[in-house]
Amino acid sequence: MKSVCIYCGSSPGTDPRFMEEAVAAGTLIAREGLTLVYGGGRVGLMGAVADAALAAGGKVVGVMPADLVSQEIAHTGLTELVVVNSMHERKWRMAELSDGFLCLPGGPGTFEEIFEQWTWALLGFHAKPCGFVNVSGYYDLLRATIQQMADNGFIAQQYVDMLVYADSTAEAIERFRAYVPPPPKWGVAPVEQRY
Image 1 (cartoon, one colour):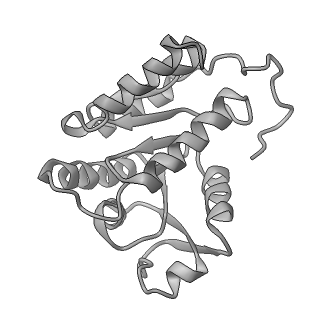
Image 2 (cartoon, rainbow, N blue to C red; image 1 turned 60 degrees about the vertical axis):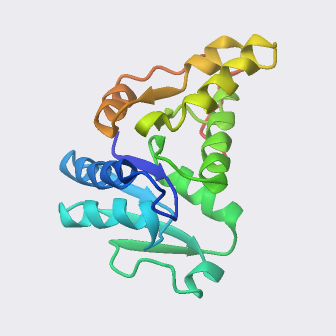
């Protein structure tokens, strides 16, 4: 594993532990010699993760659509800022650059991004781990909802179990390194990763 994509809120949230974990995540990723890939923003938890990684001497790659850059929310101090044309291209590029996908607390954009990567993983489009840092129980209800999908026959249990839940970024990264993907849903492994 050489890089980790972090999805998280463009707001700080209401619990100070969210920000504490964002800072811890960025610091840890840098100290582990991993590249941080994220959405490129300077605000909220996103900005805090990037700032912490940079302060710890890490490499940080942000990916952001041009229209958001023009609204002046892009982080200007990154190792690299990749400017793309659309949100779809942003997600594809972040996926291409990353060896795993990890969520800190966030809103609908955070959920949408990790669900797409999880879907691609269970289809076998990539074999990279996906997971959640469950700060203050933030993802407890989501985890229960995902389990309900399996309980009601909409997804096999192995694809629920492939998701990593951890109380800290450090625990999540350790589990990412030991990750073994399940067989793809349709039983045919891809020739190469595709998005």
